Image 1 (tube, helix red, strand yellow):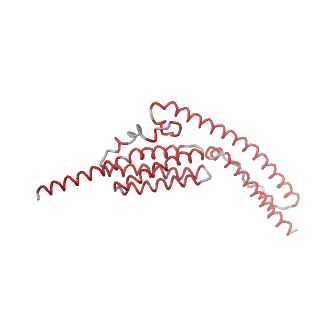
Image 2 (cartoon, one colour):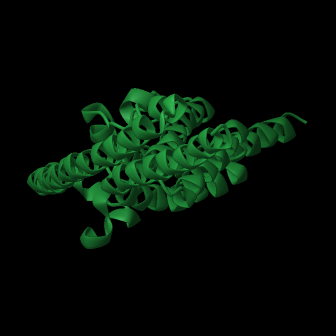
Image 3 (tube, one colour):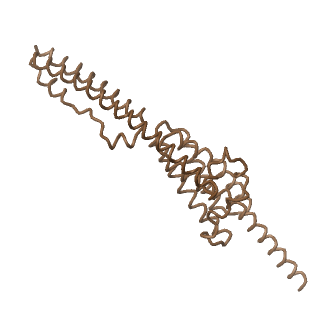
Length: 254
């Protein structure tokens, strides 16, 4: 009986040890989930947000597969929620919306790391960033932006960041040109409507022509060139529609 108990205890310890090792295997992919989603959230244009989010999807799925096998339910659920958010980031057509889901994916990734640490009774501070070396994701430097986290590639990361900043600065300059030209044109259109409203004695249409169409510098810094062009296109449509309705109302009163 004593021998049976000792054998049973040994078997339980063996199973527990293997489960822990299996859960530990998820830390490497989890680290990359955090890194990729952090880069996605910090990206300053929609394409880069989606590129980094796409890379995070694979790592979230790997974490989910491993944690399901080792019985770490909380981490598995967070991994699922993380790649679901990363997938939604792929479906958005604006930087703001993609970044919203990237932020959610990043939050899930960090919570997932904590859940993994709890499952394996590990110190999370010793695990974070410790498993980037000798990892399958580091096998292809050209296809693996997370390599920039290593000291050897610090300079490469700086160059990439500088390149992205230069691209964004150039885009902002184009937005400022659009702002100047578009607001000058809309100002002239408004002036024309005001002159016509004054000639016709149509005060209602005259007040309409005073509507604001300006796009602030803060908005430009927060949005893309496409968003800026869309703003002025919508404002033109809005002014034209209001003019048609208000001048029609004036005409009915002549």
